Image (cartoon, rainbow, N blue to C red; front, side, top):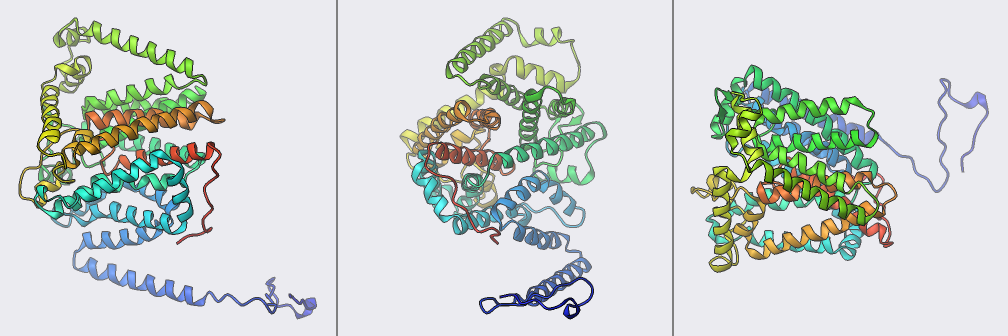
Length: 510
């Protein structure tokens, strides 16, 4: 019971003492404040010592450790990591001003380690939710089976070294853990994340355009040469902005440009979205990855197809889109690439020539025929010679780092998982794609507020297509967003089926 006194008995200065009853106990914050002070002092002294020794990489790792502690609350960690990932390689490059390049830079281990910690936090604080969604979602069951298969392939001796398998898990196992984090999101979170991607995509595109016109910095050239990724068209380097390379950057700004388009389409009143799209499309021209333009166009088309309530209308729009695109390419293929180039103005800029040739006649590219031949071999050999796969990391850069050999490049996430994990993995992935789009379409049609689901449908259409013709859904920077949206879709479809909402977790999980 709280017993008050007279006004004269109260301390001056406006503070009111807390008088405790028999069932309460005082909360002493002094130990926590003392511990925080000690940790701050230790952190400051550690950074000072490392700074005097010129160990900038070690300082960055210490600060990343502190950032990782903030991510132990899974939902907060989602925002922190999605903001950090596009700038991770830029941070790594700044370290190269002071320390030498390292192929096994520990900075690159920060995202997978934090993702594992966030996943464990989810299991601890949302255990009932984990079992709830796993029990009521076929998609979650298939994803769990695929994860188990990936884990087994970590130990496949055919890849030459256990470290190859462990490193391969970074590309295949870790991204799918974001599915579980997606179960924590609501529509407001997803729309905020979309806006974050649009802003970062615009900023990094502007920096990429700067790189095109003013050139790369010395440390940027040093890093991409060390990674053997220095590629040019004519006399200019293809840009990568703050990302690891062309693929990560082009996919990110393609996604961001689509999100800006979808946001503008909803109201058709905010010209800032159009300005953002213009900046990102210009950057896509200078990065010169034709797949990014296809990804952007495909996302837009799929978004417009599902921008309806009626399934019959959606089917009609899909048929019309197929006919229009088929007719367009039937017309373009009546001309040679040189004819299309002349009709576009005969530009001598190698970036424009490269882009026009690839977009107008994608199947006539030499690289396309090489890929098809490689994919054919992978499928045949998987069923005839390697039914249990060749190891999870056998198609990644880890094969070169740890096995001493040359890793097999498939240029396709889908065919990589067949090569490394066997044909069963390919069958599981196809089933996952089918179930996902079935559930996503249900949410598009039945949800009371379908906009975010329509946007997600467009994003994931491009990602699943890109997983066949590229490395989508298994890269470190972009795939977390995609798998996060898969998890959010699982939550939406289970909750809509009337099986209950996400079980509440502690208010402030560590």
